[in-house]
Length: 368
Length: 257
Image (cartoon, rainbow over all chains, first blue to last red; front, side):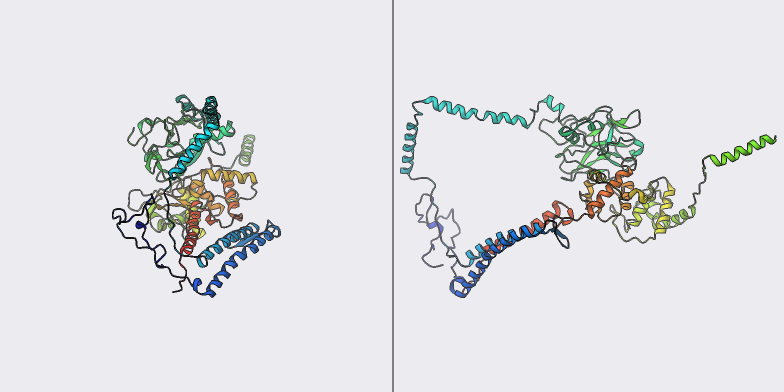
């Protein structure tokens, strides 16, 4: 660095009021400012050949851009849409690949050229540009206030106050339509509304358990030990559109059969299963992902989103992961024709937590 | 008297020609096969599954009971080299199979004789021929509902707890897919024919065959693993090259001194 350019250390320059700091400020700057490193000229600064070489490089990158742009136009018109570029694992539409490569490289080359230009040829002298305080000068502030007073006076707002007041009213009420529009976000979650929507599913006494997708009802003798069935309520089939999706998302179940001698069935749930066939909600109690990753030997059901793991051989208690509540179990039995049916709706709301949820009735490890 | 004899004779002839043939016999013609299988079983399987396939759950070397798993389970496990396992563990990895087809058939016949279980599927059960586009779409829906939780939406496989994994389904024959669904090997649940019907299974096999045979036109598929492999590429190749550029921009070039 040359002796005259900015050799002064920062603490001797100025504070935010513009005053010179004369004495060393030990408390704020305990380590002395080493200053800038010595400025060394670049090769291109002293060797005209090197400078020419750098110029040629920059010009090459900039010069390639028109060629690539023309290439883009050629690819656009000349390459048919059904040509494919096939090379090992890479298989791509030749036109898309060509368009992407030509346009991508033209942008990249502008950038590379500009960076090379700045690195090799533009001035690289270090310099210090000091910042000033953000407050305006007192005379400027005074001038601004007088101007403002003048404008207010000229607008007649001080004499004809009704204009100002009605304008305030207008601005306040113009937001009412926007606020009213927020009602579209959903119903107000009153206790009654929650009980009829988020805390209720299609399951009810006598509703048959059916296979998802095929809607085939399930007979207990067809379910083997170790079997998993992704199910839905039979009455889902009558619904359509949004209602179908909404109800399907809440009512989805997994039906599993385990050897009743190898699992824990609490006394309060002794009549919730049919010969070791148990039915649980398919919706994770953490944030509501559908779960059907069931290990038939460990009886663990794993949620793929955040690895919450529920033990279906133990009333669905959480054995791992961020879920805080057991997986709700659906009480089931068989109907007159021998098909699996629900005995009631879920006894607790399914799915993830919500603010108003009453979580006192969830099954916990150790309950009976 | 003669008339009575004649009537009895006619009746017996009629009965023998018209009545359904019911062969009541414990030997259905493959007892020789079963005996061979039992001998092979004693050598290769009995140390874990017990001498009569009853299973061992108390010893240090454990194996589940094979009563009722059926010939399909044997064909699946032994043909893919999963069984006999090299060492006990949760996961039975695929390895080269040392048994001949006849030996596997004998083992399957023996295990099938222990108790009723799913039979080895026939070509007609799993062949994805003659499936309509509607069947393939339904197969896709069934696959995503029942299988994708473990095997990934492209059938590329996925991780399970404690180091276990669901294997990739790519390149598997329809027979293996069918056998796996109907028997539920290792941690996989069973999808019995009464619940997930044979035509549903065939639709799933057809969907997977179609999915894996269709060329991917979207450039590098990166194994179809979703965020895992895409993230790896994004972080290593994408961010790596950005870091490289940043270093190049900030690097001081050659100095003249």
